[in-house]
Amino acid sequence: MKQFFKVISIIFMPLLIPTYGMLLLVNMDVFSNSSFASKLTAVLGTFLFSGVLPFIPIFMLVKKNEISDYHISKQEERTFPYIFTFLAYVFLSVFLYRILRMPLFITAISAGSALAVLVVLFINLRWKISAHLTAMGGLLGAIFCVTFKFGSNAFIVYIIAFLAAALVALARIELKAHTKAQTIAGFILGFCCALFPGLFF
Image (cartoon, rainbow, N blue to C red; front, side, top):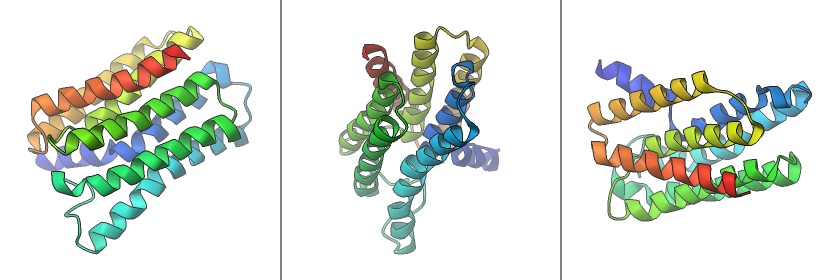
């Protein structure tokens, strides 16, 4: 069972969640008239800025034995990777708005995710809040916001996303990476930081 929870933690690594979100977004009916090339650019660009770029310093630090693993399990090792991730998310927001010309509220969701990373960075100086659940909360908040703005009915997507978040929380708790409080706090933080900026714009 422990191996299963490790696989869940890898599949739902925080750096992959924005790409999953973009895959969901470009497959919505409102983007049905968009070309395949534009959809591919959106997905690959999101993966580059929110996945690849933040992973590079983590990879280098693991190779230098300056951090213990790719999940950055030790609280004291998280500051520099989080700073770099925050900057990468800022670049993602600029990419979505200036290059892809995405609606402002989608850019606001991305900027809210960058804010969530920054808040996690400062909280982490005192308390090991869950980055996995911050990302999952952000995904669910983004889904709520996008479907509300477009007037879409995505009840099944809500249920699947919520169950996935619950599974990730269980995995992080069972692996003793976080407490229940740390996972709940992370989820609420990510959800609010993605939902409210998007609704405001």
